[in-house]
Image (cartoon, rainbow, N blue to C red; front, side, top):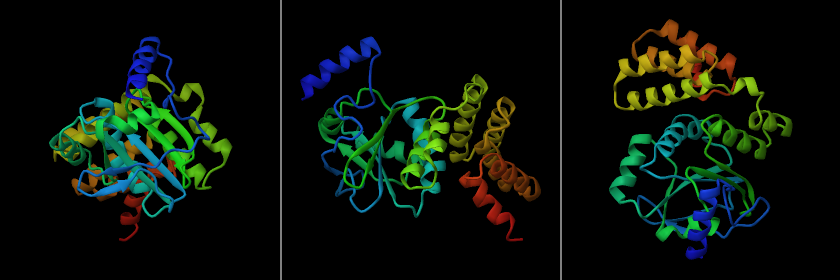
Length: 271
């Protein structure tokens, strides 16, 4: 298996022709691995007690994996709390426990981190590039898989989950997967990069630097709901409640499902 996977990696990466998973396709049933976790003990890759399983493949030393982990911790995980879904991340044991723990701490991830011994799980699926994600049902059937994309990656994963939970229609899912072309533009990409940097800076308690970066994000694209809700959080820290509530309101108007905007407005409505 490992030699086959290694040879396939060389061929596909040289040609650029890769599916997210090379050995498992939508509709196939996955083996359910029992893996050690980053905090000790073991846990299954997939759970039969939830409706939707989501598995991310990440690398602690990779910029895109760090960006995805930060977005997962700040937007996807909180927004799915209490729902019939389980999210895990798979990381190779080629990385030291110290590197893995630092990666988790810096990103703020709460999900189980499963350690892939000698890349057995990566080899089983045929994961070529990172980050990648697979969405499975309670029976381990692969429903969808995705390579990382610089635009809409987390939005597409969230939409896939909501569709499988029955919260949105197939047309609404397709609209997220294939947005109108003029909505996916260079300024949105730049805005999301600035926002991710702002999130990292705030985790390091660099409030003013974070405010500066989210300001740049909004200058690139003032229709990015997550940037408005993040700026609202900055304003809360600055004790500027009036303008913070205004930013949360804008975020919700742009995206009624924006978690930080909704949480911020709850606080605004208390007083």
